[in-house]
View 1 (cartoon, rainbow, N blue to C red):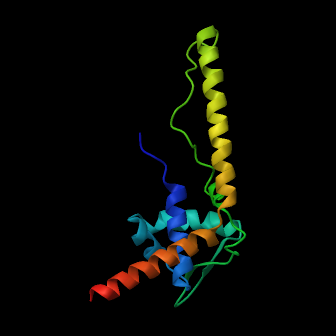
View 2: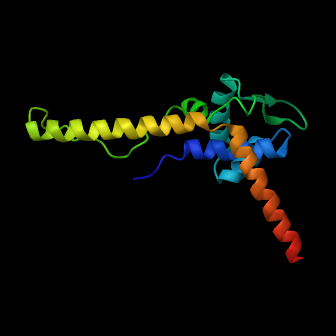
View 3: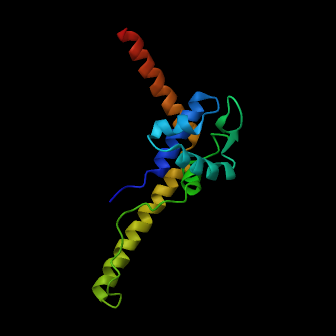
Length: 150
């Protein structure tokens, strides 16, 4: 089963945008994801509707972040990309009258709900600024290591 990587992908391009500090075209952003610029525009349009990004027309135009990175959480972006299904696993519903199936489904549903609640809590505690800061630290460390090698 293919995993849904939309959340990861959009966070990826948002961090590139934050780091670049300038408008970036759909072509540039799609190159980071090895995907079609049309798909990037479609997702970015949804983020624009929520006020996270804006598009700038003309020469030097493109997409830019317009939100406060300290106020937007992973949960906000998760919701903006359509709240993709967290788990590939699910309950069997072939024989709803079967008591065994009912007990198994109740147990699994409780565990799935708890796990999802914990994940959503974690998503709500991490901001885009947190990710941008971690990237900047790793980038600086990487640049320092590259400088020492030359």
